[in-house]
Image 1 (cartoon, protein in one colour):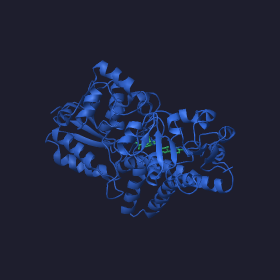
Image 2 (cartoon, helix red, strand yellow; image 1 turned 90 degrees about the vertical axis):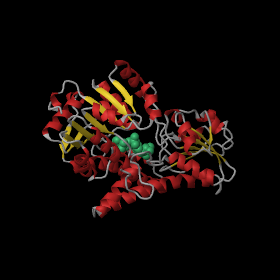
Image 3 (spheres, protein in one colour; image 1 turned 180 degrees about the vertical axis):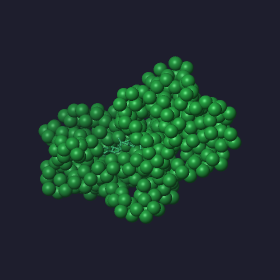
Image 4 (tube, protein in one colour; image 1 turned 30 degrees about the vertical axis):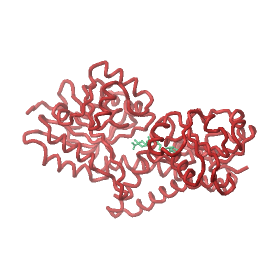
Length: 450
Ligand code: UGA
């Protein structure tokens, strides 16, 4: 077995398990930082696509960087987990931790399986780095697993290094993170992590070295705080609406207070996606298990307010159509859970579109990137290929994801296409006066009705 300390290895070999939004971006970014990288996935189609320079999802900037790194010869993709485990020095675990089907808890089977495979197939000293979002206490259990499975004579350590990247901004967030958190690292592992992140550290990115449970909790607490901020402004939006105040102006005014900040104060349809909803639920579940009932109760409220926003938009659509949407044509702009992604996991936009379809409306959805992913999840909705096609003949138009092309659309041109020029802005990004002067009846969450 090698006895070379990892921090003295001339060029670290980095393997990355899981090539979804997190892992694919991480693998490409590690190559960009100059390392030899092996991206690994059990899904052969994903591996083949990435090896051929194709990113199997929409992420701005990633295809260009993938192509650049494949050309350097530093970046490879493989479906052979065992071979990657034997090859690498540092093993990043980037597999998903979706919500379990039968409870709010996180499904840890993919993480456990990846860590087990790596541990079993090590042939030299190694560092396993967990990046997946896990409930507090998971990493300690994984350490036991690694100790049981790693071959005798191999010195292996497991640390946690949560990821804070946002979809749509994943490349920049990975190359220039706003903090690097590492949990449970020995001095040697700390040195290796500093070697891996030498470039962002040199740029001034702060490093927080801490214990395993704190590192696990930093990640879910960050997402829980962001979710709480969104639900706070959505609760205030309801007060604004009842009092004829404007929540968008209110949010701008709040945002000038540096203690509060303007980000994540956009009132509207609320949060969705593959992270915030499942992470607050997993934290709720874990907090309850640990007896921290107040945290669980707070997050329950956050979740309820958030889901209530979807119901509020459905109600506005029903009201706009005189109480029933049966056989009404509804144009929907937006399917992705936010702009600059094709991800429709727990998308509030699709949720609303599907609910109105179930009530008998003819719903036509347009999204600049998420049409294909949306069709796979909701094949019974109609999909348009342009804004105009979605607006054509509509009795009410819903703006459910704030893609810039929707925000910049010309209300005069669109008014002539609609059957009834009636718009519901569920993301607070349209300018009511412009739409009203173009002849539209305008409703927005947290804004005066007239
Ligand atoms: C989120 C976090 O922002 C990342 O830091 C984290 O790394 C990631 O989850 C993760 O755990 O992997 P992401 O899911 O890409 O990132 O999306 P966000 O940009 O956080 O947006 C989440 C949702 O909140 C979207 O549906 C968005 O429309 C909604 N949102 C956001 C609002 O409703 N209002 C706002 O003011 C901001």
